[in-house]
Length: 160
Ligand code: PNS
Image (tube, protein in one colour):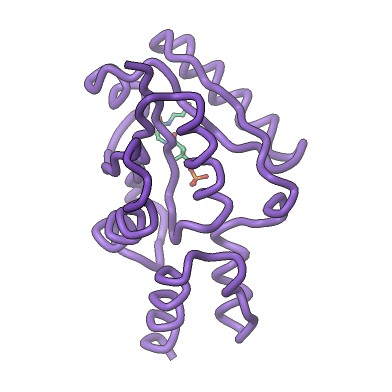
């Protein structure tokens, strides 16, 4: 079984994430979408909410498993028999830091990182930009799965 983990904050998941998940499913037998918990990072959605959103938007993809993890990504890989990490690359600006993490993870554990170029449709897309645009009333409905967009609108309305 070729298994890969797609780690991230997913605060919230976007169409860009979904695109990478779907394409990783064409290369690997199982794609584990893992919400990495970083207690020092403030998030709009709780871990449970992010897991729920990911489960909803990947319900039609039989090769996806959704999970969460607090700690080093390579330890998660070791404990779950995962041989590879997949990361989406949007632009050259992503590359420096991603390369550094890939090399660190490889040295720590031997786990490989596979880079997948993001679709040009989503090369400008990030969860933080989506939140910023939505906070000031911009329409981000074309950038998010419908259920995520609804939850985002609701969360922002609660905060007003
Ligand atoms: O969606 P994000 O916030 O850009 O994802 C970054 C993430 C969670 C993939 C990265 O910070 C990570 O792998 N964190 C887990 C902790 C870890 O293993 N750190 C060492 C990296 S070399």
